[in-house]
Structures are given as structure tokens and as C-alpha cells.
Image (cartoon, rainbow, N blue to C red; front, side):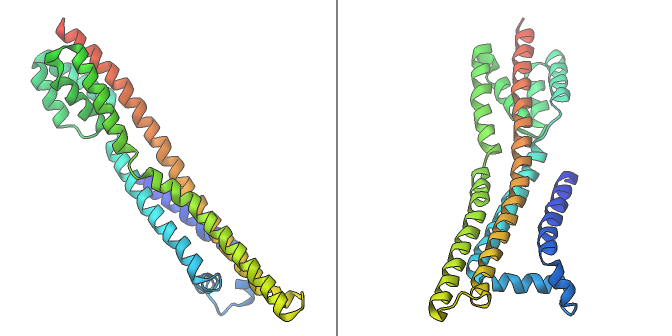
Length: 241
């Protein structure tokens, strides 16, 4: 949980820091407005339609990311300790004692061990097949909803760029109506274009940090699962002898 808090803190600083630095000059010029008021005003000026969709992408992405991080942290097991406990249980109490150790241990590695021990009476080959098969099931649980997170990472900047295009279309429409290309005519449309781009990119950056952490955590757990599975087969081979 400490890692989750640290990542949330970093992401929060990045999000608000990026926006605050972008509009720091205006905040200084208008001392009567707080940062949150400026943020709210620019959000509305960027267009509630696209900015709201980008905000929804951020909220849903963060919800998925936090849920995955909590799940992966709970799924992390000290595999060396578990292998040692199973080894001791096999030596002292046999298969049933080892299964009891697995039942009392949380995490995908313990679940894989239990399935292997459950099929060990049918032979080492059957136990190995059970470990491999159930390992695939556990990997699927680890990867659950991660594809949605990658979708929001891709969707946020795309929505921002779409808002940019619409803002530029509005700017050119204003030029056509006024028959003038002065800065005052096009400033509104360009401002909307830049705001949507900034928000979309900031959301994508935040979610990308979470995504990379989740992928790294998953890879670590999968590697531990594979190493522990090999150790279990070795223990069963030794026990059968």
C-alpha cells in the first residue's frame, strides 16, 4: 500500500504541476483567483464535452489502475518461504500437510501449488500439467482489466487531438465569418485547441506511469510463479522417491 500511495502522490504532482506551470503567469496576473478556480475556468473554456470525456477517462483509468495495484500487491508472495514451508510439510506430514500450508497462504503461487499437490497422486506428469494449466488461469486473473487501462491511455490524447482539430475548425470559421485573420478573431478557437491537447496528454502521462508499474509488477509475479512451479515439481519428485 505504501507503493500505491507513493505512485498516487507522484501522479498527482505531475498532473497539477503541469497545469499549474502552464498557467502560472496568468495566476500571478489575476491574484483574486485561486489555482483551482483557474483550473475550473480553463476546463470550462476547453469545452465541457471533450474535457469531460477526458476527465472520465482519467477517473476510470485511475480506478482500474488502483484496483490492479492493490490486487497485485496482495498477490505478491514470498515464494522462497512458501517453497520451504511446503518442503517441510511434505517431509513431516505428506501431501495433505503441504496442501494445508497452501490453503493458509494467499496469492496465485499458493493456489498453483495446491492444484499441483491435488493431482500429485496421479503422478509427476499429471501434477506438472495441473501446475501449467492453472498457471495460465492465474496469469489471466493478473492481467484482468489491464487492456482497458491501455485503451484509456490511447484514448485520452486522441480525444485531446480531436478537440484540437475542432478548435482549429472553429478558428477558421471565425476567420471566414469576420473576413479577417487578426489574432483576436482566431484566439478563441486556438485556445480551445491547446487546452484539450494539454489535458489529454497530461491524462495519458499519468495513466502511462500506472500502466508501466502494473506491467512491471505482473512480470515479477509471473517470474516468481514460474520459478516456484519448477521448485514444486522438484519437491514432488524428491518426495515420491
